Length: 231
Image (cartoon, rainbow, N blue to C red; front, side, top):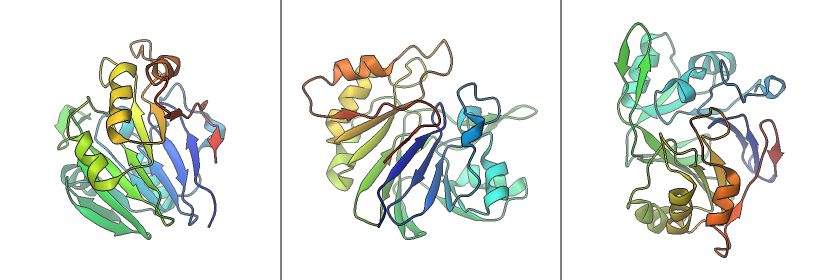
């Protein structure tokens, strides 16, 4: 087994290398992402997880799926949209469901947000979601996607006991640092990976503010610059 490796690709996009050596892409958005480091563009993937259909999470899903051949895990409406675009390798699911792909146990959770894609009009793409991923060594990740704080995060903690949570902190469209800190405490995680921040001026929440709200909690904040990897 290797160590878990997390690479931030800007905004809410990540590359995760699991202890078993699988490469996961989370919400790949590279084209037009002002925080994306081109030198870190992934060349391979074993799995692509898509939380919802907004451009800043969805734009490069089809391109990366075609490049890597990796199956795309997404809610039903996103699956149907991509299928109509010619993609064929999918693992469609919906909230509450659990599947095993590439040796990883993946559960789709709720998220409080909207989901659509603009392409000659606004297209409804189901509901926004999050993912709980149980890794080969038993470690568990929770990728919240775009979401507000919601009470059932306590249920996610009870059912899945995540070790690390990827949480949006930018505010305006998602949780801010204050409510993300509450989420981290409810989830009972050891570490938070902040996301959906440092991209646009409207996203005012900062990693430093999150750290302040977590002072005394014992929860570590993983501070990465785009392109950096933590192991």
